[in-house]
Amino acid sequence: MKFFLPFLMFCTCCIFASAQEVDERTPFEKIRFIQKKPFFQHDGQWLEMVEIGGFPVYDLVEKTKRRSPDEWQKNFIKYQNYLLEEFKIERKDSIKITYALQDSLQYLWLPLKAENLTKAFEFYKQDYQNNRISRKHQKPKDDSLSYLNLRVDGYTPQEEGWLQPEQVIHDLEHLEWVLVNRYSYLQLTGFDYKKGIDQIISDLKKGISKRDLGMQLKMFMAHFGDGHSRVSARYMFKKKEELSDLPFWILHHDGQYYAANPDKKDYYNKDFPQIKSINGHSMDELYALTKRFVAKTTEGFVHRNSLEYINYYPAFWLGLLDGQLPASAEIVFTNGDKEKRDTIAFGDLNLNPPQEWHKLKVETLPENIGYLAMNDGMEDEDEFLDSLHLAMQQFKDTKGIIIDIRDNGGGSRAPLLALMPYFITRPVVGNVAKYRISDSLDIWPRDGYLDNRYAFPMRSSKFNRDEQEEIRQFKKTFIPQFRTPNEDFSVYHYLLLRPDHPKRYHYDKPVIVLTDSGCFSASDIFAAGIQQAPKVQLLGVTTGGGSGFSEDYELPHSKIEVRASRMVSYQPNGKLYDTKGVEPDIQSAYTLEDKLGQTDSMLQRAKEEILK
Image 1: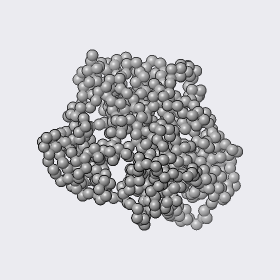
Image 2: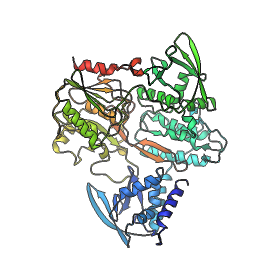
Image 3: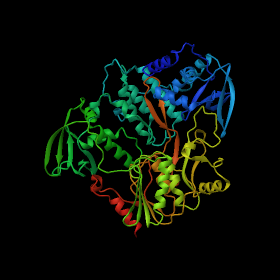
Image 4: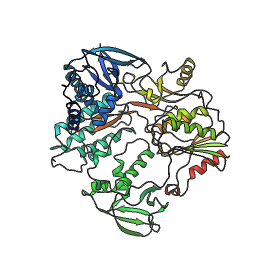
């Protein structure tokens, strides 16, 4: 109700302020969202909305998102008559609807009826929210998944945010339907999802708080090995004190935990640099707890994110272990021989890791080596991409180039498409993917499902005959290491990297790309794609491993959003990104001094490789 009320109040203020009566007629009897785009059914075919009465549907969607970000799809349908009224879209007996079909825009006139609003909304509920897999739920035969019953709020019903057992069962049965019918990585790790759902249901008793259910679902979704699948951590926190942190950054190296002072690039306590325990809990115990909440993709991804959870929310985890949120932490520091105890109050310190990363840094190093750093997202804005081309012009006469994408969490594939033409002379495949087709999806886009990933079926109009032949030759050696049932997935889609670019020249000197476990999503794609160029090598450690094209699904009663991938994504060598990551050509791990921010041995090693 919290989202409906502001929306209705807003509409009331905007619309009923005028003297005219609201026109409740709408044109659509059935509406479905595919890849978060609204489609309507006409003559048994699903068509993508582009304009309603000459007004862009995109603007209507964006306005709905701003008013109710958690329930915008439902409200786009339920309050469509208010949207049409507010945007002053003229409505007579019928209205012109523009739709997209096979790369062209077409239109038709649909009659306006008051009952269409009810029909569309009921179809939405039937099509999505009421889909569930009802089965007999088994009692756990062992306690291997008992941690899925972890709670903060306990078992006493609360006035706000409390869910009844039947509501939770509906939510979980709907989630199971989503996993079975929409999820691309359901079978990736062999996790027994039915057993996991039954474990949560077995401990419902009189119900559960939304916070506790969100926490349990976060651990549940972590099992699938898909780096993009998750439940947001925001459901876990109720008050600011739960987000309090400590005045140092915790590092891990060779089995030991260190307290680092990010500002001084040194240990927080020079004489006792290691951390043995906090409030009586060993660091390994804290790590084991946070690890349950991290998607089980690559080892590096799990380790990195488990440690970051300890750094960002230490008070919360200690509260989970002790049953009460602490105001301070008694920390046992050690130097490996002696120990020192210190009590430190928690505070809102907003710490940052010791390393300094850059959205975009371009410089020519003293050794006449080009250095291009992209550590804070893969951008697709024209200004950012133009800067990449300017950098390549600056590097034209260098001895080599170092491209630093360490800690880059992803974004767009556009930087790969911008840089790759400088390093190849013929097209190469940079990524292969399949899209998980909905059980009820009866449309087939002419150019496939992954155009926003620049990936298309081999016979797409996006490829000319020569490019199709390149893909055909690639297919002869491509062996996918994860098989999907053909009836549940699309044909293969290919990201083709081309050498033809108006600003390119051919750079034929060595290129080293620095990678680590912080490289994820679009950065994974960047690493595996650019690795296909003849003179490009990756240096560092295996990337985080994630390329799933996720979608958010709102559970009917709790309104918790669960993110699940719709795409299976392969490296050109046939390996997945998820659970595998992209392996470097030259292994070079971080030293403890690197982690403190004192040195950068990877960068030094890259220089040496170029100057060989």
